[in-house]
Length: 598
Image 1 (cartoon, rainbow, N blue to C red):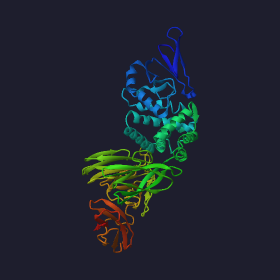
Image 2: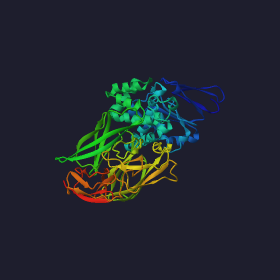
Image 3: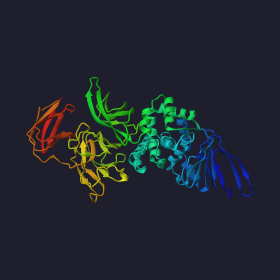
Image 4: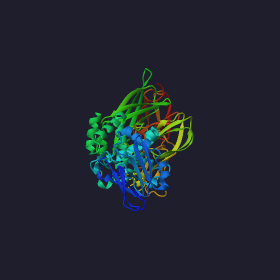
């Protein structure tokens, strides 16, 4: 080099050789073997920031005007290093080094090139600093064998750039980061990479796309969730030690981790690595049976759907969290290979139940859960809604889930349901919670093209359906207006809900009242027995057209709905799970009250 510039390379500097004037030879030596793509040279009029940490030389290189900003931006460098040593094993290199460059970030062993644009004093680019350092385990110490295995390098380094937050900050910040990352994967990865891809064998044009990085990080978190912290961190530490300075492919990673941990990873790799798409797990039903001890036996039905996957996911560890009595309790289960129900005893009657509340496993559901104490507007970004609360009594717990797969269930009117998504609204509304929201539809990339299956022509036939849970039929929702926004052919709009009920919502194609006279016909009927404890019989004069029936409690909350076919003279409603109290049955524009007495 000349002109006052110096060269910074892999390893440690062993000598300068002066060739006369300002011309230098800079001598560097790296003792550890590296793949050729990690060799590097950075040349500039650098100033050095030298220090040591736990006996390890640390060398940061920047031009004089950037040194203060570099130090401020790298405040947490040594803590991040300590976190990775704790999680993945010893740092096997001669120094930690970063050299500022004009563009790009690259994990050159011991001499990371780091973009000057991220060194701005605050910690905005800190995750990139952490990502590149993590490569000294994922990518530099063990290296993917082929480009098809790039998730081992980039996905696990990106996972590590989330993991460091748990040590530097706290568990809550880490969980927010991994949930936000999963939301972006579900919404954007198939748009950015032009399709749904398996992590292994990603097309070469998309080797460095969102699937490799962001979905790879999501799957890294899930591998941690499958194994548990003790097995996961001990397993990857042993993996690093056994294969340091070596190359591994996806199958070898599976087999080595399986041998080290004793955990059968065949299902995990078959589901998360070797096939595209993702699963979505939903709660179909919650049944509560008082027990004599006093405890409550709670049975929760769980079902799986997939989006863009080639087979169902099996042997998935899940948790069910039961909320009620001002607290919550979590139980662990395993979803083996078919939809089922899980039964357990808890010391209180739950208000609602959540799958994987602690985000141990990230699947095809993104959600927000809020404690609401006052009226106002609340953003629920991962649920893709904003809610406008007009009234809350005391405080309420509101949870909205956006599911990234189409629902199943009873569909007596043969609506064409969305194949891509639906919502669940649940929570503990306490003494009362009234709010409005908008559910947006779109066929464009910025919304993940979620509704292109329903918007191939105009928006005239798109509508909003509702059900209480998977045991109830999908019916047209009564409390909304469709806003097509400018015109009905532009492929975007929203459903404006004036009232939001607990239950599930989905977009569909169809005419809302085909074959149904809803709330327009005077229907004569009577209910018996009254009071009732188990089965309510409804006798009615022969109805002239299909009708919707709805059951409300004394607070006006919809508990059940269904369809009565034309010509029917009687039907039964199971009220055995209803609390004792007064209720209203509505058919057409007629109502009858009844009392449940257990």
